[in-house]
Image 1: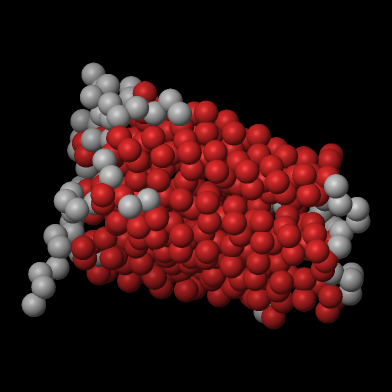
Image 2 (image 1 turned 135 degrees about the vertical axis):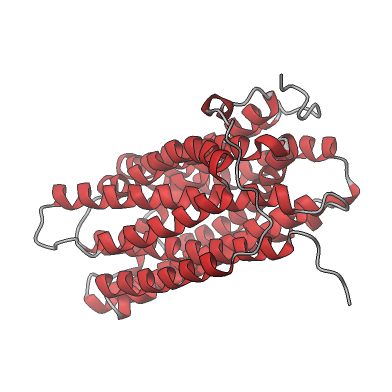
Length: 421
C-alpha cells in the first residue's frame, strides 16, 4: 500500500475548508451584483459595494501574515470561516425600505467583513502549501496549482449557484442557506483538523511583514497590475454589459439574464481554475529550472496583453451590441481566462519559491496584500470606466494594466531568497 505523504491529511482538510469558503464567496458576489443592479444601482454604485471588500483585503493580508506567524495557521483559517458566517447573517438584516445611500453603506460594511474573512482563509491555505508540500519532483508547484485551480473552479460554481439561488429562492433565503451550510463545515473542520500545521512563534514581529526581497516586491507589483486587469472588466463592466444585451426588462427576462450571466461567470472561473491546476504541465515545470520559470513570467504576461488589446479594437469598430460581438467577447474573455490562469499559477508558485519557510506567512500576506490592491483598483475602475467610456474603455484599461504587469515581471531575477538580511 502506498504511504500517504507527510502533511497530506492537513493539506486535504485545508483545501476542503477553502473550497467551502470560496463557494459562498462566489455566490455572495453574484447575489449582491445582480440583486442590486435589478434594484437600479448604477455601475459606479455597484463598484462601491465591493470597494471595502478589497480595502479590507489589503489591511487583512498585512496583519494576517503576522497573526498566523504569531498564533498559528489554524487560528486564521477558523477565524476566516467564522467571520464569513457572521457576514452572511448580517446581510440578512438589509431592509428594502432603506435609501440607496444607506443600502450602499450597509452592504459595503458587510462586504468589508467578508473581505477580511476571505483573506484570512486564503492566506492560511496558501501558506500551508509551502509548509506541507513535498520538496522533490516539482511537488510545490503541483500542490499550489491544485489548491489554487480547484479553489477557482469551486468559486466559479459559486457564481452559478448565486445566480440560480437569486432566481429561484430569492436574496434573503439564499444568504441564510449559505450561512447554515458554512457553519456546519466550520464545526466539522474544527473537530477533525489533523496535525501538520505550525502553532506559531511568540517572537514574531509585525515589522517582518515588509519584505526585503527584490523578487517578492517586483512579483507583488506584477500581481497588482495582473489582477487589476482582470477585475476592471470582471466585476462590473462585462456583467452589466451582458445584462443590457440579454434582459428585456421583464421579471422573466431578468431571471433568464441572471442565469446566463451567472453561467458565463461560472464557466469562466471554472476554466480559469482548470487551467491553473494544469499549469505545471503546460509550463513543463518538472523539466525546467526555477530561473527558466522566472523568465517565462514576462512572456506569458505579454501574451495575455494581446487579448484585451484585440477585444478593445473589436469593440471600438463595432456599432450597437450585436450577436456576433457578444459571441466574440465571450470567446475572447475565455481565452483571456486561460492565459491569465497560467500567469496567476506561475505567480502563486514563484511567491512560495522566493520565500523562506520561517517567514512564509509574512511574504504570502504581503503578496496577497498586493493582490487585493490590484482587485481594489480594478473594482473602482470597472464601474468608473464603464460609466465614462463604455466597454471599449474597460477593455483598453485592462490591456494597459497587463502591459504594466509584464514590465514588472521582467524585473524578476534568479537570485531568489538570498536578498534577505
